[in-house]
Image 1 (tube, protein in one colour):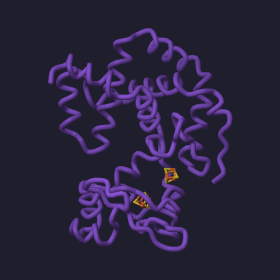
Image 2 (tube, helix red, strand yellow):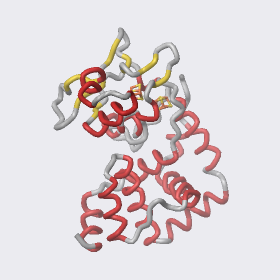
Image 3 (cartoon, helix red, strand yellow):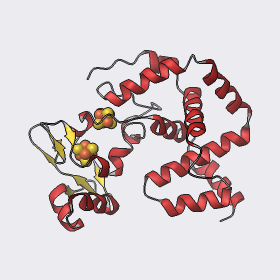
Amino acid sequence: MDKESFLQWFSSEIPETLFPQIAAQVLFRCENCGECCREEGYALVDEADLQEMASSQGISPSEAKTRFTDPDPEKNPGCRILKTIGPDRSCCLFDVLAKRCMIYSHRPRICRTFPMLDLDTKGEELICFYSDCLGTAKFVKMLREKRGDPEVQKDIESLTRQEERMQALQILLFVWLRRMMGKKEEAEFICSITGVSFPPEENAFQRDCLAYFLMTITTDALDGYQYEG
Ligand code: SF4
Ligand code: SF4
């Protein structure tokens, strides 16, 4: 595949709504409060997740599969679901007393991409701002503070004016997501044919993500949010 055919595929197949969601996930910081580890009961994991979980516990992937997962009732190809325990159906890897994930730095990718890339639960909304997620509460607070910042407004204006820069940012966001999902080789291939370099310069990337996200989110969504954790 060359650059031109990639760009054609990229513009026709990747929905515009995905980019602000990725930008939000780049900016989001999980506080490991454990709220999303309880009463959820349906977190999909695949072979790569199992290997990561197994290595964190010093056990084999097949043992991790038996101990930590159950068959996926929806039979997604190659997937299992995290086992749940107790009356509130907590994830079996959630330490109920400490209220923390026991394998946090090795947690499955579905846990890493929650909540901004939680595509299944948003319906018509671009982003679901969960009222019981401490990370979301801090994220919203940061956005409320930054949206009036003149420097951020300048970033938004300059991004809006520069079509090529906007496209490069969208490719970079897509590459970031592919790497997050464990598709490192695919991400490198995209960089090689498009000329986008990864990892990006951290500060500039964060600023662009913030500007991009604020361009797409409505004031109502931010003003209406209230933390209830
Ligand atoms: S693996 Fe960890 S982060 Fe994921 S649901 Fe279980 S306890 Fe929560
Ligand atoms: S509810 Fe939010 S802050 Fe808490 S563990 Fe889940 S993603 Fe992280």
